[in-house]
Length: 605
Image (cartoon, rainbow, N blue to C red; front, side, top):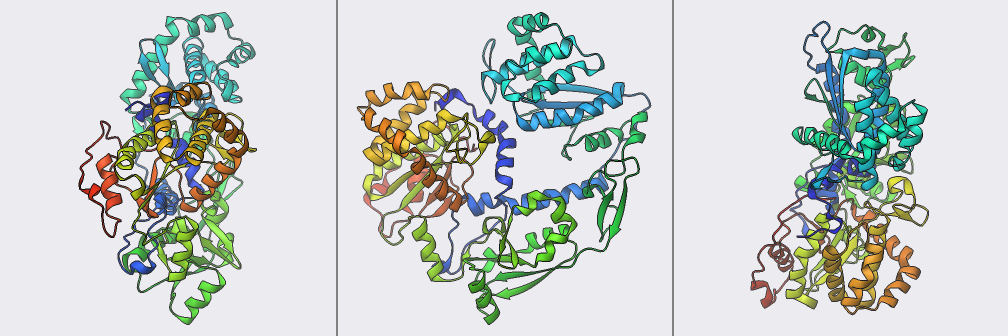
């Protein structure tokens, strides 16, 4: 399968670091089986619960794991005078790559020759001498010029000062290197010759090979003494990890703590860092704040309401947590449902004392999975994996809100994509044969994954003051709009023709200038598409974002069939079978075997 912009699947896996940060604020994982009581079963909107609900557990469990690692991190006795090897694999425009570069810089300066530091870049070589990086040609240039600086200015990590200068405006690493070189007393002509000649390409190729050998796909990927580093990304944490393997005098200067998270020695008590980051920093331990909370559930819910893992994780984070269980069918439960407008269970309702806990105050990422409901803090339904409707009325209202009509013997597939995500393109091309087979005997709704404030909300990714953005840039967002316009004004059949043609004939770099020729060849009304884009873009994208947010969509592709998350294969036969299973009386077309496509990748953007 051809992909727009020739982005490879591996490159999109490299973007997983960005995706994780985009999703942390609104997702959580819990494994749920929905079996009993179909009349009131939520049927999992979105990858929300089988996939997207990855995350009160990912956020919570990562925090727990990190605390345990701090207590049990294995060390190898340091060898006097031996350097500690530190490897960072990054992308020069990745904000998480620049974050760790900025954090490691003071450590390198203070520990000097005690560290053997290596910085390499995650790219691919699409043809001899032609490189591709996730954020585009600018990033390739930034990668090369930084490697040139490393080669010619390694003494006392002078090149690090150059990189830190570039990091202040990482979106322009292809041009700001000149001023940064001048500020740091570097020979601009020497760097220019390296950058523009074969020398720079060779340096990048060798760097790429080192990153490939480490299987580094996400920026940053980090190793300390050949072991993957998964700890916090601040200077003190890096130095503390290095000093477990070093006898450098600088290790004696590490403060006892820099945040409350560093204070974990006394089990069962909450640790507080006094004078954080200072030489006289110390840990103080106190009894945990008592936190009462209600788990609202249903005896009819079965395994879909198994809260064991979440309760265990919550207990690790909120040491004073004390749960009580209330059934929705009890008088107390009914009162809670009404007062807090509970739609699905299990629901977790915390007293406001949770805000006084160490964890709440230290972990703003955890705060984002709670919402204030009247006088209680409720874990978001997505985060809790809530999937069981408290009543038939709530269930009906939900399906009405997402535009799904059940019982009409006409299954509906809603597939959320990004117009330049290769996995989304794969889904489109897998679904199209099912459309050609079933036509109006099923409903096919292409949808689009829209973010708010992506990439900082600027014009490179967004419109409408940063409220409507797409992961792969403004041309992807524009193409999303054009495809929405074709579907709205010309029908789903023309949409498939247009979307699939764009998959193979245009790229994410040239879609804004390429699309008209494609539309003209397909005999689409170009003027109508332009008018729609000019007049309706904000309204169309706002509706897509609203529906995606309601369903908890965060990646491409995310597919629903009759409102249920679809997590099966991506061949035409897979999609056809999933649709045909929803008929009360399946049409004859369902006996046709559509077979597979050439691609079997299963990732997502």
